[in-house]
Image 1 (cartoon, rainbow, N blue to C red):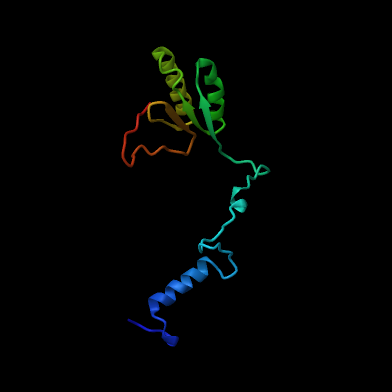
Image 2 (cartoon, rainbow, N blue to C red; image 1 turned 90 degrees about the horizontal axis):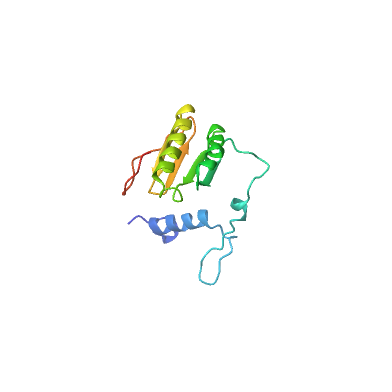
Amino acid sequence: MKILQKGIPVGDFMSMKLKELLFPPSTPTNADGYVDLSLDEYEKVLDEEPAATYIRVAELSNLDGIPSLKEEIYDGNIVIVDISLIKRDQLVLERALHDLRDVVSDVHGDIAGLGDDLVITAPTGVRIDRSRIGGRTTEY
């Protein structure tokens, strides 16, 4: 075992230095030795800075919702669509998925199923990775 000056083993010295880097002496700790961290800085929403792409969530209950979904896709947004309400009507489901595939094809985007009740559409330049860590993916 290597010993640094003052008789501190190297492993203990490194551990002490790591603690000092992560939790400087001025960081308040409670009685149990845990550090109280404030996440306020990270939770701020920057409303004044618009994003180039948004992730939108939609619930499709009939074909009347398709035009607004198309608009979001044409605007370059990622849209996650809950299709659980139209799954019982096979004709409506097929028509809705056909329309979504057409608009995604128009913008050279991508579309894939997320489980049995969700479909995700991606705009130009975004691809959906269909490989999964466990489980299966349904393609539309």
